Image 1 (cartoon, helix red, strand yellow):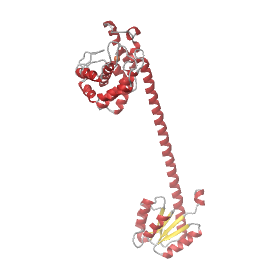
Image 2: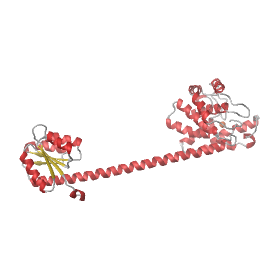
Image 3: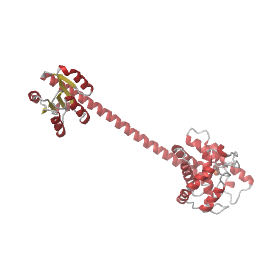
Image 4: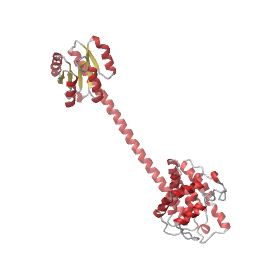
Length: 364
Ligand SMILES: [Fe+2]
């Protein structure tokens, strides 16, 4: 028994329609330093339970009105911390055993022996204290698991945030060779995610594509400055070299274990393919172009159209939309174009949010 159990005065409720039995038990337990209340039936017992707390209830099974087993069920439901011990005669021993299965701590056969009552209460209190210890231990474990899970989730969130931050900075660094603001990356991934949402791609896939699309032009770091930064249009030989950025990007990103980087490799490799097969590097057409490449292709062209380049002014939303609409089925997947047309206002607000402060060069 715990120290606190020895120190605390335990409260007992005795329930029996025989007043003499209640009285004898009350007197006996009072001598043993228990605080004892008595009730003559179920209803009176409930009134006690509403006003006071008890540690143990001793109740006769057979009483006028509701029985001791009814009281047991009520206590199990509304006061599960109270231990219930039932009195029973030989005739009802089967009922008493059944009550044990329903959660009674013990039963005592009538006629009652006071020593047995004391022992039964003592055992019930000990069992109850043990149960409380187990509950406390379980609660402690649950709290610990919850705390650790929270910490892990936070660590994972920070890791993901820092990974996104690193990718964004590296992608912007690559972009800033020909785009002083690097905002192109921020717009492309916002356009891409918006299109993917409209196309009802799975949520976790959209999260990957959002980050992966930042790296669509990472291969530009392998293109010589003389071509990348050349003012004016590129000649056909220079254009061939520039086209190499798709495969350079794919090479940088190939053989990754992470799904996000695998998608980034696909995007880098296929974002210049065209629906009719006239794109590069492989001239893929239709569904043979992965959806990631088809989506980023539109986002990339929309961004080039709506921003100033050395060879063209910035087109307004209407003109840019018109060009994209007319390229449905030739440059772009018609389903992606339809999705774009449904959400072009969202594109307009993304463009506004990440406005370019200085013109880019070629917009590849
Ligand atoms: Fe590109």
